[in-house]
Length: 147
Image 1 (cartoon, rainbow, N blue to C red):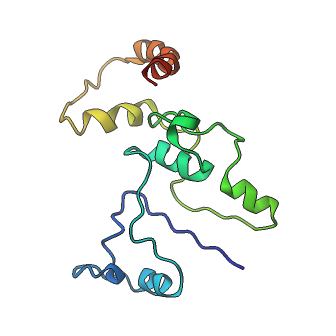
Image 2: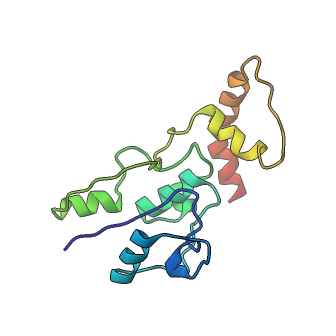
């Protein structure tokens, strides 16, 4: 048996021809949906990409794996559905953006996803690394207190 799992980053799954969207022309995805399983009401566990992917790859809720932001996903070597499939003899191949492991986002990616939505422009001079590193070391304790 073959398993094909398609995940599109930042794509609204309702924008497909098979979902009756008038402006969408997606014949190949429509054909796959017709011959397979189409999840019409699927939602992710986090509004941020890395924690959402980490949850899906690990099969665990974000609060269990402590994936709170785009810097914190699952740890390298943690068990995933892919490692389980490979143990069962499946050959796995992934293409594209699959960042779900802790530390895979740059400092800029961690900060801009928050300030862009608030229309805040950061200064491009100097480096805030020193202050941010101090916050990162305290981050885990802050989240434990919140829970």
